[in-house]
Image (tube, rainbow, N blue to C red):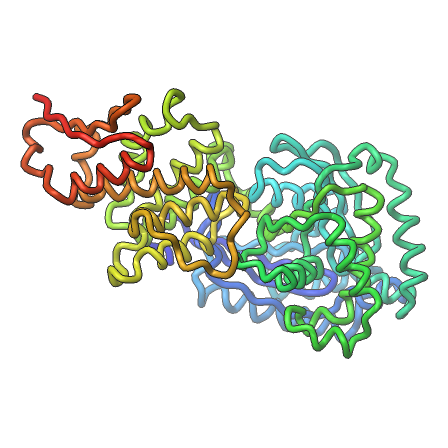
Length: 499
């Protein structure tokens, strides 16, 4: 999994109010690739509100989990390990005692995050995976809700931490959602600054809210099973939340898209979401798979690494693992540029970025049986573990990968993808895919040749210019694929041999 990397694996143990989790990444880099993930639901904060202390059974389970995770450090080969504790340990009377026992197991100091630190780091994690986030980051843990405003790639304020996590609410009000409603409303209404962000997006972090997103996906029969940057209209999110609030544990257990371990906390998490949407008059709810742990990792990076584009870095990472010549992507990006000049198709900065990523990913399906390459490339890109791209952008990249292998054919849809992209975006994907198909035929999937050739686009023609030394490479298949590209642009294809 670390092929081509000099960085060592980076691990985080997140000691939360509900769970203790170990996540291990291939390295502390801009596009973190998850190589191991294990969670134990300990319920440390289950009795915090009523007793002021951590749950006794939760303490033993948490310490046992930490002991295993520390043992796994050597087994997995984790170069650097960060252990961070949040709301439950921070607020409990016996938090210092628990920390002392846990640090004895670890052999080093555990980072006890303040409420302000937890909010900032969670928001930074969201921004690391969604750089253009504009609205409120809401990170719902078992013991607390962190709310932070973000825009333009930056955190706009210190944000706030509220003691309204599902476990704490359950401990405070028992099973009474009516009492929880009043507690949540009072907590949210205390935040005067929240009113300044009405009508913006809510970026939702946390396992409870991810389960609600899975239900929405299942209802829509949504074909892209990637939670990160999945968008739910605020009205839909509120409706699902209100349905969940009314269902009992037995009914919730029958819903296939709900984790059994979340059944008791789900109605309370749904209520928090419903009240927050109403308070914000949110436009949409955007699910973020990135949060506190990714924020901790981002803080480890130097400024140069932080400034990198996560989508481009993720595409490079995938190409290094799967493509024959990873460096080919940069050649293809330059070679396809004339097709998207202002007087031809034109492209925005975001479209140029997607084209760059598509070129980097153009060869990741080469090793599959030829009959399956197009479909494999589409699904591989559609479900790839990179961030910094929304679902329409992800589908655009996947369609380019399909057309690069299949030409003008239409993919057998993984469910119904109609409407996710506009006709114009589908056409751009087709043209770029056909251009890449031509390029790989022309250069026989090798590097070094393409920069010596050139595409020129006039009102009538798409002209392929090649040096005389490459003239013997202009065969029937090259001509056929050049013509296919030209037809997609309502032009004729021609070749011209230079010096």
